[in-house]
Structures are given as C-alpha cells and as structure tokens.
Image 1 (cartoon, rainbow, N blue to C red):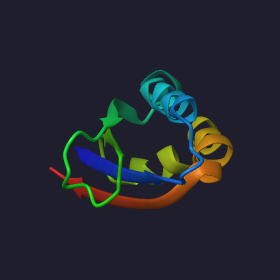
Image 2 (cartoon, one colour; image 1 turned 45 degrees about the horizontal axis):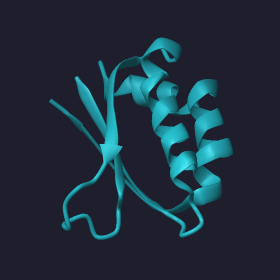
Image 3 (cartoon, rainbow, N blue to C red; image 1 turned 90 degrees about the vertical axis):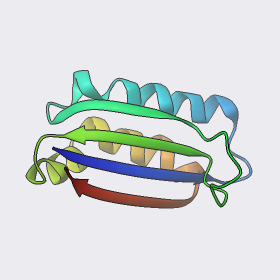
Length: 97
C-alpha cells in the first residue's frame, strides 16, 4: 500500500466555501479515480502545523499508481480549477507500508 499525504496552506483570499468545495471533491475521488483506494481529508485543529491548515491522505495500492492518480482528469480538474488559484504553499510525502 502507498500513502500520499498532502498539506495545504491557502492564500489569505481563500474563502471557507472554496476550501470546503475542494474537500468535497477530494471525498469523491474514490468513485472517480480507479487507483484511489480511500481518502481522508480535513482541517487541522492544533497549533503545530506551521501555517498548513488542511490535510489530505490518499491510499493507493502500489507506487506505480501515484502518477496515474496525479494525471487523472478528475484530479487535474481539482488542482487546476480549485487548488492552484488559492494555494499559498503545499507539502507532500509519499511512503509505502
């Protein structure tokens, strides 16, 4: 199995509705992207996040699926149309277990 973990820091102009829409789209990835086994996402509630306010965990079966997931049209639409316009910074970690 592979965990794809992403942390997001948003621009000041990012609205709660825009962020909520992104999280909703994340939750629909398992039904729209065949490689996605499961998704977990949400808002940080501690003061240890160094400004990263939201996180995403995507579970895939094997590392080879990561690129297919990243290039999938459903994922790219979220990234290009919703995330990039309000993204200040991003951090990603991928590991097998």
